[in-house]
Length: 248
Length: 293
Image (cartoon, rainbow over all chains, first blue to last red):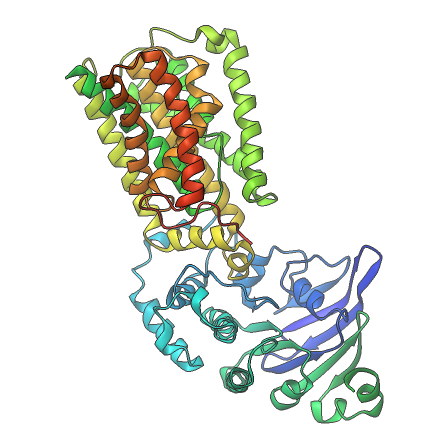
């Protein structure tokens, strides 16, 4: 198991967002996390990536407890994420965003920034890798375009590209297809499906059952901060109690 | 001729200040209203150390820059929790506190009476004894500051600072140590301002707190906004214009007192007009008013 959560709990102003959540992820695979609004899905991602500290419990990544580490340290260890709202450097070009994401790999995990990065060679290698990756996700022609000028769906795709540029072992994606048009949704689903070949763990939070059913190897259903079901989509998503209570 | 050299020296000093602020405010999005305070720390450090520390001008300037850098790092620390205009207000507080110290630590700074007889810079056997020699010294310092600034922003670090400016959360999620970069860039910016302070103190041989007040901080911000943030040469252009325009008014028959007042009006007007008409300044890359999310 590459990533484990053990007894994670987190509360916000009296609302228990995570209640004793425990789960373990294999090092390769696509895991969908489903649940209604307020189920604790995004809170779980925030805790796993250091953007929130758990009140109780541990997060074990590759044998080390990473709960409470700062987000940049966790990202540098090999866990990258996207956000529910599109977060990019909009004034930079698509290629610059990808290069930045690629260059950040292996930076110092210490307190001080890695100024030695300044001495790295110019970005021609990063540009080649970036172009290759952009072509892989279907943004190859848009490398010179400002990220802020892309459509919402293309921006969502680019956030996924920035995640991939880091060559991280674990990708946590927060609603990768929400709010995009049907054509782009199909495209993103296709890209997600192809991530299976990359020897990575991909955990994606979604509201869309259809996407999870088509892409995920396994699914976790959350409600009120708890995991209420987990297993293969074909089994979990057809359970009458789950369908009636959460997916109808 | 001496007057022209004097104006060029002043322009050089303000170019250093504007470029130093641009690193912090223009690239990293940390608008500081305390740049004149770091300018003052450099000037007072130079004045206090130049008669006491062996090793000459370069050692003293290095010590002053290091001390100012440490204070700058401390000032940068709150930026980890507070951003944009809230950080600017924090630096305003720092400016007020340091101005008050310059005014009230009479035994150390001379208080409102200032410090006099600050010795001329000596580097090896070279002594800055004329305006031309001060201009050369200032030009070298300007060149070094611009070169360091360009080196910092032209590669990976520049991209990181621009990313921090626009979205710290996204930048952190990529594995970049946002806190470390913000504190370090704040320290570098403060060190550069201190270098300007050292040259200023040596050139005038006299300093008092009025040269390092909030008004001066606003003037430095005005220079960055006028020239344009995030472009290295933009702030330099802004500083040159903001120093030379009031000086030019002397030639239309205005008295020194009138020119001094007009200078304040000019700075204020520049801020208001550019924020309305062209927030990115003359040659800048970024809208100064854009908020990090």
